Length: 158
Image (cartoon, rainbow, N blue to C red):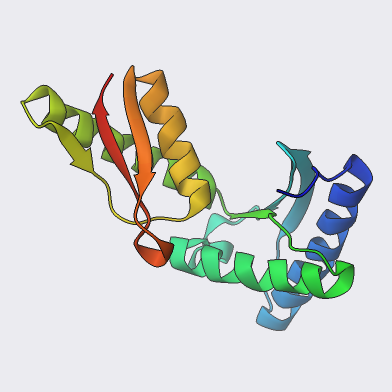
């Protein structure tokens, strides 16, 4: 595993990513304010707009994930290093975290009803990490299973 990035490296990633997203928004003729942060060894970009409808089409999970990957590639092209940056558009990450919490709650209900385990759908490593944290806070155990695009989380009783 690579050494954690320094704050300066994360800030550089954030600046490169913000320039890329700003240019993308200009091309799309969309207004948005970009906030850059460094948390948990990752650069975080948050795009917000005073008019929530302005970013609605971009805040769909599939669109955010695709744009995040493009932004990571743009950063990698400039830095020469793989980027783990996280992109949030119009509160999409908070909305997805709420969806994941509901998904975990339904899975735990199945276990409480007698199932020995509950498999969740395949998701990104970032989403699996969020799920593991939610499951742990709920007093249950979880582990990732499968490979590549089929990698998913399995929840069991503690």
